[in-house]
Length: 476
Ligand code: ADP
Ligand code: MG
Ligand code: ZN
Image (cartoon, rainbow, N blue to C red; front, side):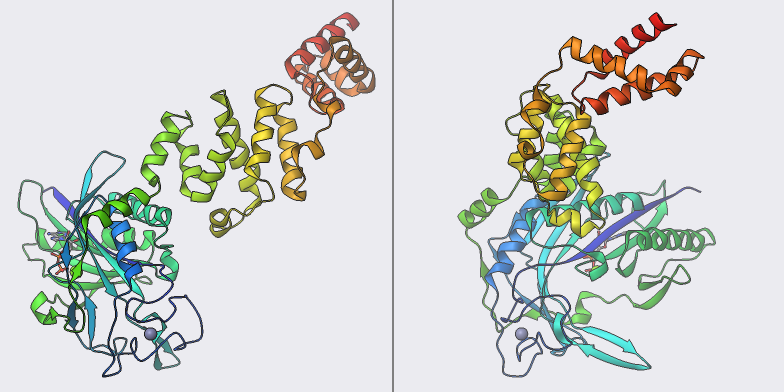
């Protein structure tokens, strides 16, 4: 029998507001344990939460970027459960009136994934297991989160991974989160079910908690779908439960029975007032959103005629894209976009080792100087290899284009000058000439190289080759 896979994702994104959701403590990552805390975020009795307005702003930005509607009225609820990382024994979250609802994103295969809701809530602290003891660090307690819940619309794990990458890039673009999986600012629960292909109704799902890398998601979903198919094919029933993924053994195992909403005894948070968002507030936020990742990518391919793979690399990091657009805003030839892209991807990216460096994009070259360089290429005053050499020096020293390229360099070569240098090339490179004469046609390249070097890249390589061949033919 054939089985279909069905996945739905619940993604937690930590918002990068300066302060926590209900108090003034910092949200900074790291820091000595229990130093980013106050009576409110460690839940001392008698303290009162106050909702950080910036959290609403960020969450609405996220909602709009994912095509959600924004609720005019929403509210905070208490989700009650007991766990050492949650000192109040309840989490302030949103239950039946989320801030954003009814959104969607489109994947590269054209399929649309529905976003059921996005709600705001507080993060819990962190348990640290060390030398047989368990410690708790409340620094993370009260850091604002949004939870993005999709419809069960994914048909395979690669769709889910692409969706997560899209979420990551979109959130970074609009600046509401750095979405670093390894630091836990992007975490994901994956709901998995399978059903016979002939059946309409969805199968019973299990939920794999707290996945923290794309590869683990792939492994976990593979293991879990195979397990469920085995259960069904041998006549059994999948039990709805919460699972954990064991990275060592690469398998999923039950963590606890699936809790229902009623297990959490949700009720309205009595210490906070209802949230009211005016429509023009939403409109204002909508207008302030930068161009989104997906839109930008499309524009780079359609307008600038860049190959998709190159465009993706440029667009992935917002600052890179800004530099690219600044540098090319006055170019006249479509080729110049490609030239600029090539220079960034080959010369500038070569200077970076980590993702963070690409993200920060700290370089000694301004977009203004890059524009000058592109203009010299466009007007054929310099050639690509000279541009590369110049850019390299600019990146190393911070010098300006015209500190490096002199008037002399920009003067074109006359035919006589070029012929003279070609003759010199033939005289001074006995070996290459001999090789060429004995039939190694490729040896001409080293002669052309000599000419390019002598002329600091000013020569037209094709013309130089023509002249060289002519001289050699006369010789032979
Ligand atoms: P809960 O709050 O109990 O986790 P939800 O109804 O909010 O339940 O659903 C949680 C997630 O489970 C959603 O992302 C949804 O898309 C997904 N989901 C629901 N039914 C299925 C199913 N049959 N197979 C896979 N995923 C599912
Ligand atoms: Mg859930
Ligand atoms: Zn606090």
